[in-house]
Image 1 (tube, rainbow, N blue to C red):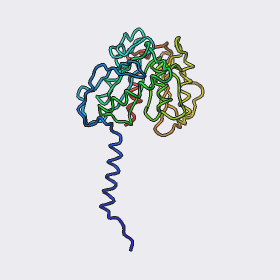
Image 2: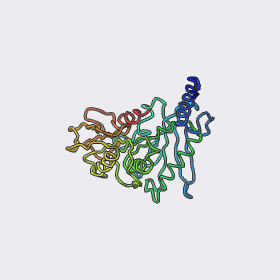
Image 3: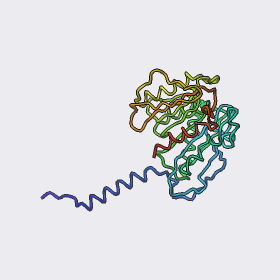
Image 4: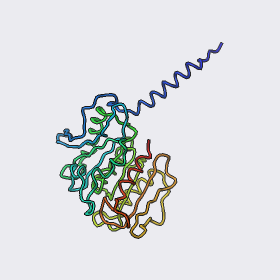
Length: 286
């Protein structure tokens, strides 16, 4: 006689499977009393002292898995300048790239400091720095391990691009602001959700370089190329959401007529569009 499992046994196994699936998205720090707070930290990476600044939600909940957002500074910048912000009317960045007020306390922010004020990533040392930060942070804080993000301007955009290339199974999405191929691209054949923006008058990193970075992920993500090349609408930026992309791997491209500027605004507005665009792109992933 053939024996079949009872419906109760089947339901119990299904519930255990679902519970395992859900808890697998939580980092090891979930449920722990945190030792990491909103301040600066130092770690040793390949024998070198490296620094990063953390920003936690004001009412951090050790049982709630948060997004983890890395923010990389431009060449000549620093983690402190990203945290404090600069004059946005003279090409500076808003504090934390303007993202915390938009996040509704759903994210933990990490602001690393570069060697020699940049992200040369010699022999992959900045990728190793990233790996060690992820390991240390997630062992102590509650992070949704499906929702790690990276953004940056200029050299910081290059570092975010390098992560998209080299850590596609770790990074869910990147936002590259006026970036270039400066920090390398190890691998670079797997899909990663990609937001890019660039100015056609960029006098530091030509827009052609930004388009090249974008096109790598248009290809990797299986999107349909756009022709003709999107152009700004006078003094207003133009947003292109690519079609045909693999499910879960969108590509968004914003073109404007400005120079090398993380805080570009549209004509008639005084509010930089990068923060809203970036958070809108990141927050679609849940």
